[in-house]
Image 1: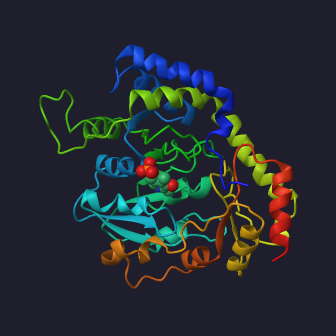
Image 2 (image 1 turned 45 degrees about the vertical axis):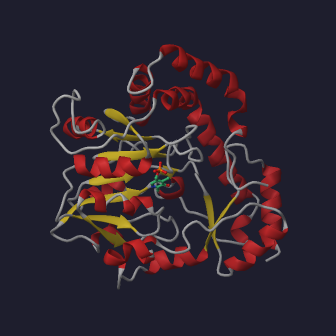
Length: 357
Ligand SMILES: *Cc1c(COP(=O)(O)O)cnc(C)c1O
């Protein structure tokens, strides 16, 4: 049983996807054309954001969004250490320094308390990662008086009482890496924002810091979403909610199948309905769980065994910090099969394998 599925959930869309590719080939518009413009409008409407701006990937999306929010040399950006490395990697290119904060190991997300402990007078922004599809408490963090960038790379399709990821902070970033909840057939990313000035700066930064490729006002990037990827994503967006429901249903299967008796289940944050990107359990003898799943031929993976602040590339910023929730999650977590089409029978098989540990 695979850990996740990328092509099988799209089987019913093959014809539409082919037609979308043909449409772009016929149009001879490949960069910043009608498909990207339409997808930006459709994605902004889906999220409930004022604007959406397509970029090349979810990592550059973070760097560009931070710069558009005014982050630069001398500033600090608070970021959790238990996340995909790119959440923090995207900070130094702005000139700011990453300041690592802890998470709640039950939700895998930052909390107002873990963020508050990392704030200083130099803090310019907080990156709230909606990890594994769970939704970090953005409004409560904003109450600390700091602007929030949502890293929503794993949370397309999730919802919360305050709204969807992409509409909660000053700005938000998404990745369309093929295995994400909304995946392109290559790299792609998006920045959403409610702030018209941030949107304007993002549009310039992704386009060499220019409005017209004649006058260059900022040192920017060449970071665009391709027409081809936008056309492919437009076919999938109307189905994102039903795919997300499939992920929620699979999470419910795990609960109903009794997985909670054998491992700690991921806890949705208050008011959220996560579209689980990865379904991540916790176990004190996680090595034994890995061995049992391997024996049963069931996909599994520890994603972040070494938290970001202890990665070699972060040694300048990650030394001598104590993050107990992060260390606990890093040591105990394990992703087990999750997809929009994971059945109750498959879930029963996974639970039976883990019950032997
Ligand atoms: C995937 C991911 C990114 C980076 O996205 P890319 O498109 O691969 O650059 C950033 N943050 C998180 C939490 C991710 O999961």
